[in-house]
Image (cartoon, rainbow, N blue to C red; front, side, top):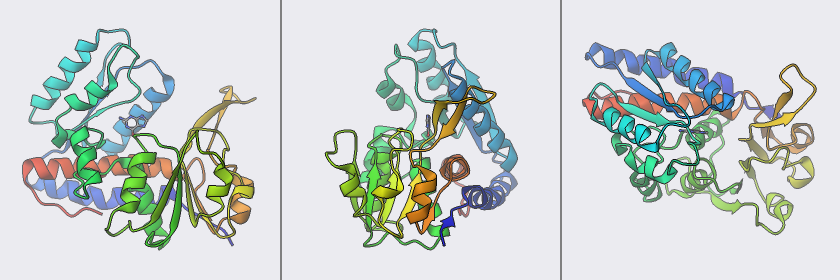
Length: 297
Ligand code: GUN
């Protein structure tokens, strides 16, 4: 039997616990506040930001929705970030990626106050994560750790293959899994577009995390019997649907599910967890900056 890992249910559980933490903060006259900044016309980015705004409202986090024209000068974004850094009512800042080509992405990440960097992308926070002293764990890999917990999967001693080396998922996922800490202690192989024989690597794995951004890259023939499969992919591919596209993961679900002991669906797997862990980091940011201790899930 293959377990379908229910990201929606695990995320709902996290949100419910976070709503209690928000109550604790509000009892201490603290309103946790997240500012999202969108500098893009990309409909997918707009959708992601709207969902994040809605998630905040649901657990009692105040959300500020800052929009900057995609063709505005880069300085407009940097000035906005400066203002949000200085605003003591704002606990968390998220600049939706990607930013336009004329904006230096690394400079954007460096410009966010590391205490408010709820994505965990500032180099100081990346460094702390690698050093085993994370301030904010990046949302997607943290959410995947919670999914592992939900199926009682302890990565300790497991062979994990991470497919993809992005700054947002692949790299932080690998770093979390090799930590000498709960949820870590795995033996991790990171594969990417230059890996010579991907299938040979994934077939050795107890756990495969597919985060390459390539539709249906990983199929059942590339898995060992009983592997746990996590699909991070959200790829728009042309299709004969109302919208003209459909969303496809990095895993060929049907063939993978035949081999896997547990697998995340797309949608309803990793996506809801990424969103829930952003709320987690925002609550943590408010707790840290306002010096009000809260319990976190
Ligand atoms: N774009 C795609 N994923 C993310 C994310 O987790 N955070 C931000 N800021 N932008 C993204």
